[in-house]
Image 1: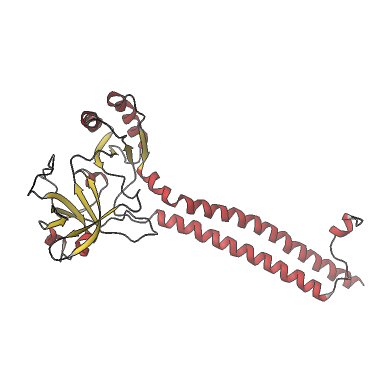
Image 2: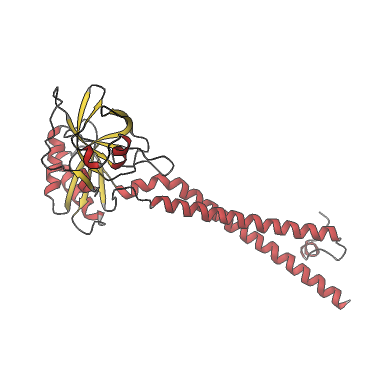
Length: 309
């Protein structure tokens, strides 16, 4: 408390020993090295999060708007909404699905058997328009002329499509060889009608699973819209939904989000951590820079004092 501030802030006196100067230099170098290491970590985390967000998933998400429908709706409500949006000029294509592909990082996994090979595959329910809306390429077979049954009939195989990873997992020699094959899940029979390109619904932290698409007419969970314009204008799709929705569901609030934006949420925590580390490393670099400047100024002043003496 009895020391004057000004002389103390002016720096060390010439009475400082060699060990003290070496300690100051070592601490300054350590401080600057730690700041550089923190900056490198920030760059790595941000770069990695941006990289995984742009990974090819096997399907397109840009310009798609997903509507999450509430439970308990009557079939005439969902069918009326679908038909009204289908006729709207802002909508080019639309499809029903059990969920937005890629939003659920785990999903449902079933064991399917083709008579020779058993494999665990990720399954979900989709309608026939799903592949067009998400621009998933068709490799073999056809989706034209498939009649989706209203209910399960005994002895009748239900139609499904599989991706390229499922072809390999189930032991088929080629996509063409899989067409027409029967798959069984317990006592339920399914018939492969089409093979599409491999897709990845899991995040970059998880291994991609073989995918099987159960083609269903009764799935009414998520309705995905594709715009008729450039494909990136979601405003027109939102306006179309806001116009049509009250006609069929006036007592419910519509929940609509861009598919690309929803999938980006999977890496939001990583990106935020990277930005936090970047901000911290910037502060550390500034402090280290002040330390280097103080050490350099002290060294120059000490050398000048020696020269004068």
